Amino acid sequence: MRSRFFRLFLSSVLLSAAMPAPAQQHAGKVPRIGYLAAVTAAADAPRLEAFKKGLHDLGYVEGQSIQIDYRHESQDLTRLQTHAADLIALQIDVLVAVTSNAAQAAKKTTSSVPIVFMGVTDPISTGLAQSLARPGSNATGVTNVAAILTGKRLEILKETNPKLVKVAVLWDPKAPGSIPQWEASQQPAKQLGLELYSMEASSAAAYSAAFKAAVKAGNHAVWVTLNPIANSNQKLIAELAIENRLPTICARSDYAENGCLMAYGPGYGTEGKDGARYVDRILKGARPADLPIEQPTSFELLVNLDTSKRLGYPIPRSLLTRADKVVQ
Image 1 (cartoon, rainbow, N blue to C red):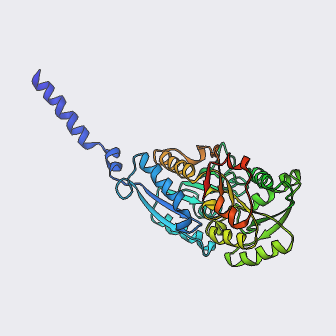
Image 2: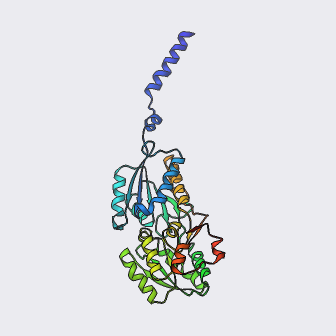
Image 3: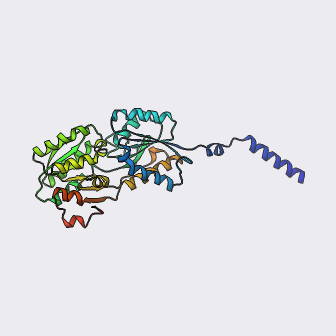
């Protein structure tokens, strides 16, 4: 009996040794992430910090259990596709793309490597996905609903000055995420009795002249759309607005922290952590085509009182009491 047991035991050991062990082979492989952002590293820092914290909360330690390669581009957005190709060549497992410009560049570069996008305004119109529920390709992620919230931002601006009529919209016709924000502003503006002025600028060098032209055209406020150039030049925009005596409403909290009079939109923290969650699910085997694109449901209202004082533009108490944060 013992002899038979020993023979069975020995056979099982030999059989196990002869069989491949894929789990053990993959156990030593550290996942590699490519991170492509169409914005300066400084402007992207809050989102990136939230993204890395999100990964850490999910059990990933950068440099140990996960590797991240970064590319930030704010000077020449035509180089985004080259950066994407460089990251793909590193044999990354997931490509994270920040802003619509970066996501489009990533999508044009690869149809096989999974893409997780953040900071995208409209993934359908920009060709990143077939639908929110079923992306249908190698790209998925979270939107910033910047176009959907245009009406609310104009409403907040109007609340600060019920007599306001002419509002300039600072947007970039070369930025795929900025275009739908300009277009989505038209209908709510009419409902609020506002006349919109197209304040087009596709470079930081064009901002000064754009502000002067907006003032000359009789505008008394500015709504700043999210786009890569604006994201990387928030303080410049804020200072030009103050210099030209134009109160501003922006689309994200960091704009108000950098001098914009007011900001309303989703926070960086939620977006970054959501992006990390998508990366985790893909690394665990989920297909981007099957992961629904998410839209934020919580938003922050920030008011910069220092800018209010510099402009001599008082903020109604009704708005201040609703603010999630007041920047002094």
